[in-house]
Image (cartoon, rainbow, N blue to C red; front, side, top):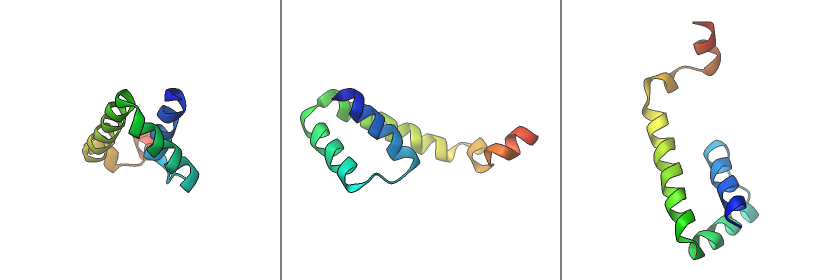
Length: 65
């Protein structure tokens, strides 16, 4: 169960989860403290990444530089 929740948390950073995925994750997080902590860490890392100067450039531009 935690492995699937972690996979969904990771996917959530890249795309919108389906309603089924959202519900599965929400149910799991309501029961699993370790995964709630992990979800907060995923969100924090995502926020930090969005504010990092390198994130302002596309991956392709970075490779071309």
